[in-house]
Length: 226
Image 1: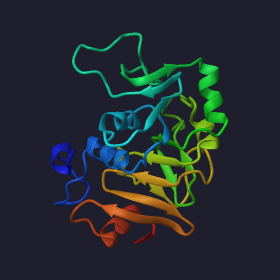
Image 2: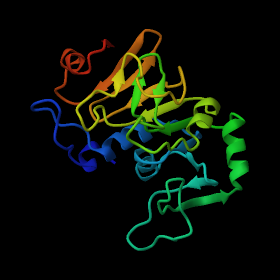
Image 3: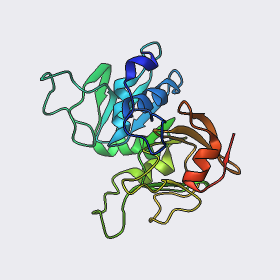
Image 4: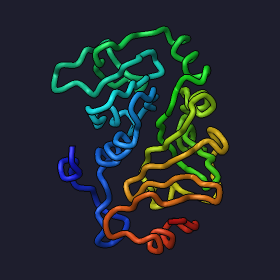
C-alpha cells in the first residue's frame, strides 16, 4: 500500500501542515516491523496495525485475551461475534492462528516471548517513561495488561496522537500522570512524526512533510535531535 492510498490527515496543530491520518501512522509502524516478529497489539489505535500490515512478510500478531495470529478487522458484516480482541472489537484470524487460555497468553508476555508490544499512551517522557492507564480525576483506571507488556516485551513502541484534546504535547520531559513503566519505550509513532528514545532524549526519525524540527520544538517545549 502506498502513502497516497492511506488517506489525508485531519486538521493540523500547525498552519499549513497536514498530519498523517491514524491509518497512515499505523501503516508506517506496520511497515517497520521486521519479518518473523511476534507482536502484541494493545487496545485502541494499535489494533489498526493488523489492518495495515504488509503482506510480503510474516508477522504474528498477539492479543492478550488469547489470540495468536490475529488478523485485520472483518469486512462489512462478516465478523464473528465471539471472535474479539482485548478491546472487545471484532477481529479475524490468519491461517494457522490459535486460541490459548488467558493464563497461557500472559505466560507468553511475562516469559519474554514477545519481540514487540505496541501500545497507546497519554504521555511519553524523553527518558522512555510512559503513562497510559489513568488520567487522575478524569478517567476510570484501565490498567489492563500494560504493565506486564512493558516488563515482558523486548521492545515497546507507542502509537498515539502528538497532542491531547486540549492541545498539550504528549511528548514531555517528565510524565505528570502515574507511570505505567519507567525507561521502557523505544520508539513513538505520532500523527506529526516518528521518534526514537535515545540516550539523550527524543531523536527524530521522520516528520510530516513541511514540518521542521525547530517548529516542532517550539510547540512541544522539549529538545529534539535529528
